[in-house]
Length: 81
Image (tube, rainbow, N blue to C red; front, side, top):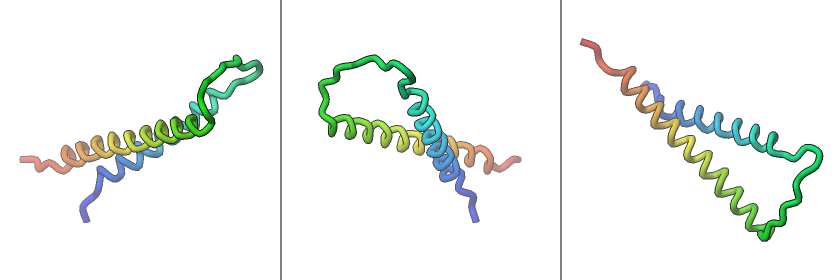
């Protein structure tokens, strides 16, 4: 069976992006005094923006990891003279 390096790369990129998203969400929480920002957004708009941002990040990292894995597979499987 052929090894699917593109799939391995995509899953690796997906896992790394999820770890980074969790990490950045944890460090972006306000500790102590948070500045009081007056945002003119509705609650639903914020959730839509977050869903688009997280979805775009995970899909983009999966595609990027897949491309890197595909290139790795092409280089590794090249026949040597």
